[in-house]
Image 1 (cartoon, rainbow, N blue to C red):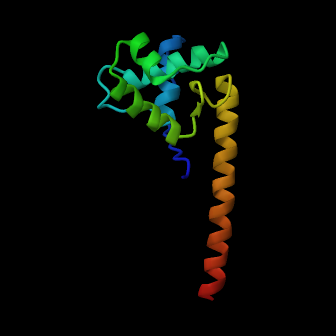
Image 2: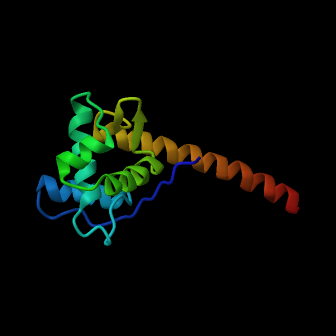
Length: 131
């Protein structure tokens, strides 16, 4: 299964409010959408960010209990975060792929670079065949 990377350019928040900056980062990475009225994906992302920094993966049940969400809602959003390559599953639960946001952006940049290299190779091969 591949990683789904979505990057959308939004204007940076005018104020230096950590919640607005985190929301902007998540929106820019295509993590949150308008249908998520109670911001449950954002809340899961924040909780995983905090616990990853502490080195403690969380199960979907723990996330559901901590955030007062249904397990189904948590699993739905975890699946989306996993599909984007931001969250990984361990035996003991889920955590962010890396321990901080700067490294996360570095990892996403590497994923994008790798994907573009593969696309270029295939494009070059197709171009040669079409000559």
